[in-house]
Image 1: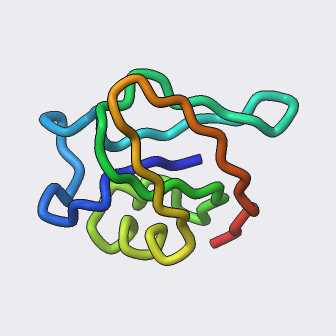
Image 2 (image 1 turned 90 degrees about the vertical axis):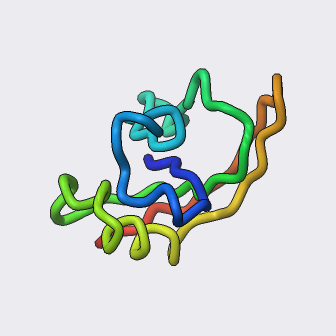
Length: 88
């Protein structure tokens, strides 16, 4: 599962923006949690990638964005989002 900022000026991912680029493994129930995400607008997707190491590159993020749902987080928000699984 991937969550990353919609602000393409912050791509490529780097340590300065770590909070805005997250990867999570699902729990046995198929749910997942991203904790401590700063307020902002994000792409979120459930995907199985053929080359998982490429997701942090601008091209990889662009491919993920095309299959993502856009969400907005304000301070203190907790949201639930249902996602379909994409295979790439």
